[in-house]
Image (cartoon, rainbow, N blue to C red; front, top):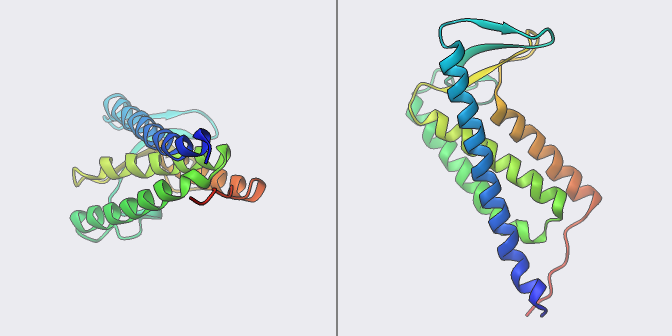
Length: 163
């Protein structure tokens, strides 16, 4: 087994972990800025979309919004943990595009999970008028899934040498 094959899994996992943490931190920073700047109810209109503060106490598309916030937090934490375990195990077989997708997916999931921890719901602020209000973490999740799928289709999993 070459030195490249020995270090590749660790490098891929480190990139996934650090990338996901950086993206989650960026998402949380943007949410903080949004709450501080338009928390008074103002709407910033940019034509195709506007910035309008809202809180989603449910999950995707507000599903589960009537459940206790802590049930949603625990369920989300279980899902994000399972996702993280899967991605950390699979990432050594991913190509660069799939690794980027995995980092975006996990970063967005972590950003929304941490934001949800206070029980108030996830801060949403990107509003189109024709689609539910969403946030940067949601963009990361959807874009990450897209990159992960595209990378998997274009560059199938690399075969690792067996010991």
